[in-house]
Length: 232
Image (cartoon, rainbow, N blue to C red):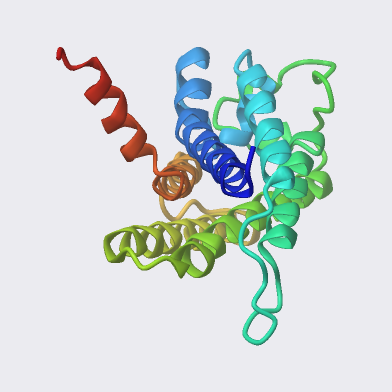
């Protein structure tokens, strides 16, 4: 295989990784809600339900895919962090979200916490729950940053608009979640809704999911599939 063919294969592998990350982001809230059969306070609380398998598998897949993703080389003149470092931070954060789950008591469905022993690494410790929140926030923060500042290096204007809007939605979701959680922890009030966190989490993961799908040229691949299916 010549150098050009080798580089093309590497590029295609990047597209596949981007598409997988996008697909997993869109599927995560859908699968955990569907197989549990209802809404909880946050996506993280599905760790304590039969949907835990999807939560753990998808977050672990995020971790592996992001750590293996290299991305663009760093511009030493204008950039401090490389894509490789950013995706390592996001990948490790996703893994820590699984290894240090949220505390069970925060869910609106208190029935799932009325057990003597929590499954896997489950707990009811507020300190560990706060650590979980930090890693979850860091994961989303990096994904939003990449969408706004790293994916927009291309010259396709429509794609860049999608990347910027997606990143802003991710960051706006983090801010809303932060306000809701802070009000609840400090003032013991729910300013928005008991389900506001899971709604904003869904907006965030769907937003970065769309961003990664667009970056992975998923639409182009879908069009090609349909073109092949057309009768000649």
